[in-house]
Length: 254
Image (cartoon, rainbow, N blue to C red; front, side, top):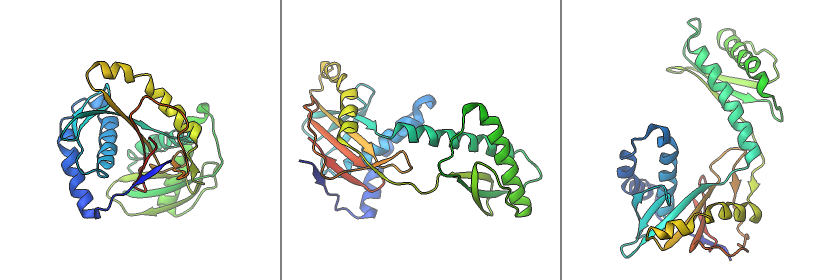
């Protein structure tokens, strides 16, 4: 049966403790190619540790992702973000073209500094070969709105809100979405992907292996937890946890 772990600390206590748990490890990151991903992983592990009183990060590694220490023993823990693949691909496509449009508009000397929140047309999908057309459309629509308060009808932006800003920036807003509950098949498939590595990790002398699955980070591609979900498969992981990131909830499945 799924067990919900409680974090009874105050916001201020959590903020202070999170810094104590992760800051020294963030400062040691020096590989720019992996820094953004590893920073996110460290932050997730730090949030996870807030639910315990005696756990800390002993080592940031790759095999497994982290080694924890509870004052008695070392524990290997693997980290995995679980998202809906199709929605994630769509989010990435739109964020990329808006970022490219923003980069080009930043060079436009006719434009003052601004922050434009652009709401994307719901249910619209485009092909990769339309990328240049979409970038030019975004530039035209945003520029006309910033300079003349005139919204040009177009196939990608549903509406725009603007405000003064210190730079020239565009925010791509995917709009409202139905939050999806994660199901047991998604959870078990995620476990299987990570489970193949356990034997090699134990060869390094870390006999206890945990798995942390992270959901609910925000966006259409994210999931929320089904509190009635029961893990049916047998797994070599000693513990399996699901962290609902945005809502700061932790579930123990095994």
